[in-house]
Length: 152
Ligand code: FES
Image (cartoon, rainbow, N blue to C red):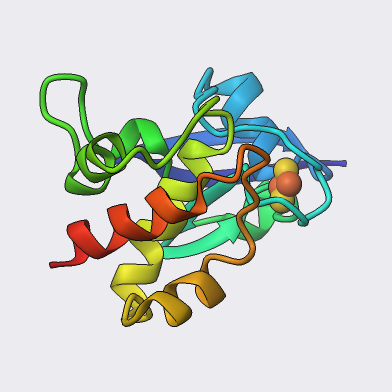
């Protein structure tokens, strides 16, 4: 079944005709070439695919594009530019919030959402609310420090 979906992706409104089963993750990566959003587990377990949907963080692998109809999607490409990084991106660099970098776009999108939600209080709260984003390199200490820096 084909469905018509309108999304505003990184500030640009676009219309799509899609297979109803297309996930937001596949739409972003395969139709839009927005490959900053990563595929990890594809089952809602790792957070590599995190994007903001109307400002709220979601796992794009679990979200059908059709469910997001009419929404605003923000990906890592929509946060900053190479010349002018978003404060959270800058903070991840300054605090060694990554090693291999694969999970980093998801970590950063989740971190931006977490600050917006008001859940970036102490370290315990940050760790709890970031627990959906796994880092196989174990860069958690730097991630927490980056979030605290960007929050302030
Ligand atoms: Fe979506 Fe792992 S790829 S949570």
